Image (cartoon, rainbow, N blue to C red):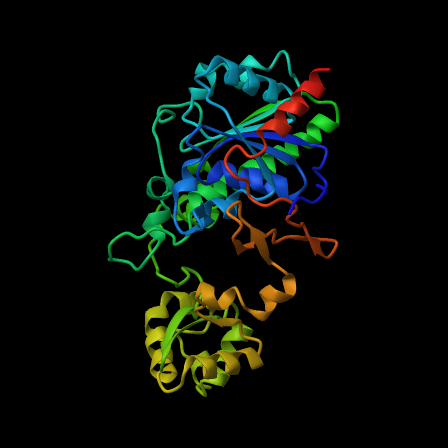
Amino acid sequence: MSLPRSGPLAHIRVIEFCHVAAGPYCGMLLADMGADVIKVEPPAGDTMRAWPPFNNGYSENFASLNRNKRSIVLDLKAPADLEIARKLILSADVVIENNRPGVMNKLGLGFEQFKAKHPKLIYCSISAFGQTGPRAQDGGFDVTVQAASGIMSVTGEEGTAPVKAGVPVSDFGAGLYAAFTIVSQLNDVARGTGGANIDVSMLGANLGVSALQTSEYFGTGNNPKALGSAHPRNAPYRAFKCQDGYFVLAAGNDKLWRSVCEVVVRPELPADARFVTTLDRAKNQAALKDILEDIFAHKPVTHWVEAFRKLGVPCEPIMKYADVLVDNQVAHMSWVHDITLPSGAVTKTVGPVVAVNGTAAGIYRNPPALGHDRDEILAELVKLKA
């Protein structure tokens, strides 16, 4: 697969000096919108290339974050390759890097070193704690930044051992913030403004998406608590155990609450002083959970989900990925795509998931073999110089 690039960013060139997740995810989002993303890798490759599972020797994890990109191998300790990197940056609209702060400057590839010669350059650095400040030089991975940002303090059940969110929110949240900010700055450049030096931190991204938790602290002076699947201001709004497993019920207002009482045939509950308002129910949700689970225990998940859906009460079984990836809605939205790996193996991936004018962006280039596009990229640099 190597189809023509198209999309709103098809005129944009991005050079990606990134590895693992946050930066590559940002680069892939831009590539999905049509940007020409050139992934610069060291001789050993992005470290995610070594992450299982492997399909004929090629990492499926790597493939999931690097579609629609080209790859060139550069040894940035070698003067000749370092010069190629400089030329690539000068040819670019956007640079993304997620090295330790200061590394790109030491290589002569930092923003300040190109600012005068390339004033329209948008240069985005992604790190754990930011490019400046007392923690700038501290390293971080998704789980450590989840801990540092407070997310782990509100994840899991109260009084149990800390757990992280099941998906790497620090990495992917930072990648989303980076992509959004890059596109915003591209709009400024198009209006005649100069380039920009973007500083995205995983810590800041985690705090940004923790708006409800930080506002609770600012408003009360109390630390938000871990509530498992429950909600601090809504009930019944959590996972409930029934005869053969668990399902999630979200009755987020009084009308939905009355529908819940209708389904469980407990017409007296709306008048119970503990459950009159949403805040009453949230305050007394432990007692409410016990009442409802005593009823739910007599029927299976399928019964309760069907009954609540008939009355328009949002509810869902706890889906495994094997289930959701073949769900009718996922199929309707055409989110699962076949891709061919450099090894020749055909696998599947979740492709672009946002529709514009009714259609999601496509996958026009399979994930690259290490250094696969070097000759093509170097030939382009010669043409640009000419």
